[in-house]
Image (cartoon, rainbow, N blue to C red; front, side, top):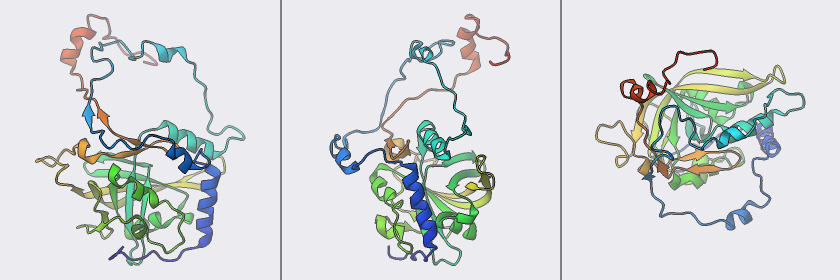
Length: 306
């Protein structure tokens, strides 16, 4: 991509370890995915964002789940994440299929000297505070085996976090390809780098919402099953400037329209989710809520376990 420095050569052994790990995890449950994909209905371009009612709009205090008790008919099994013989990858696959949907942080970084850039999606991404704006990104592996994205973030202390929308999901996914070292993700995707004001890393111009970020802190995690093995790094990032596409943000610049954002979310395995419908549920006010809760005997003191 014009104007973007190419990535510098890195140790091929790290690349081999990454791909061996991918094969071990077996995220793709299919044989020939293209054959499976061809058997499915085409993308529904006509589907627009819409609001619906909740499943039970006449729900009353104390009524519990809206499934008529169906969920209570099933037992649960307990899972010990450290059970003898249980691979750590089982926990990984379980958690990414259960904790869904997850926002995808499309993180752009640049090395301190400007000779290396990286663009990669991270589904361990979330906003955790608003004053100051604070985001977290989870990286697999420790500092000793840091990939380009984490290494650049540590060196420069800067990044951009871009939200992935429907109109560039294929391009964003392309950044996860096991390309040879030195190949630019920007060029492979065809996405457009755009300048920032407070950080040197480029933002993705196609992204409807982007955040300029500065590294606040990091925390490295150690395996419980294999003491001494570093398994992940949490990066805590302060948002110092936001970029919102003009047709997606309101006049007060405090609300993004989901009908324009059309964000993609991460589910389990190789599955992504579209956001096509929403419901609205105002937070209840006690003065109104108690009018039904108190006569029904639901305004009870707290007890152990409740």
